[in-house]
Length: 321
Image (cartoon, rainbow, N blue to C red):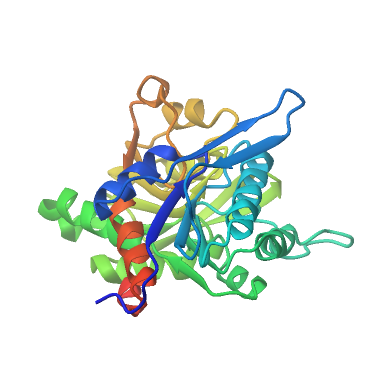
């Protein structure tokens, strides 16, 4: 039972409107009436065309490419809602951009993820709802509550069905040492063994596969990562699993399909049989033509449940079981 008198309103930026519409369908409410755009000089603008006074407002906006435009649009929308006397504003950010810049790796590096957290908070957000942050410690960059949903339950359901007949011959593989904890938790949920691809990164967006820790011979392999950007690391890992590890097949999954540069070409030319993403970043309209290997699963029902729980002031702990 709703314990407050505030009404629920959901607005969407321009980065992933399709997901926002599907979330509203799940909740059986209309998407808020708002307009976003750019002036001729490139400045973003936002217009809210309905009252939000005292409302519990959720703004859905992935800060994906063009990252800076989408981030600025989110900040302006939060500011507009707060100035319109919204009761509470929750920034729903399915994909949190700048998350990879979460620490200093060399002298004089910025910590851009912290800067973005400060900007969102200063704009007026009261809460943040996101999914599969690149680094969990980013939650601590905010001085407001952050709910970091896990996309793994969606993948678990998908792969349970897909590999039901060959469950004993399927393994989960971490594409690098840094993803071991994520892959281990995923393998436990699927009740499958795990292996690791050990690689050495020479420079940004490139990697050299060194060796495979674990026996993947004649196994169906599920490569798990949190995001795929240029696709180089994932494709190198898949090729190594087939050529060095003698795996039977390789399928990859990742929460966020950034897919910049020549990512689609790399995926098409790799040993990957299929790559499954969540629609935290809006798929390109021509994705099927670019790569028949790429598939998307919807996160609308998970975000809808999270929004409903936040609105009704119910526990969120069930979302991480």
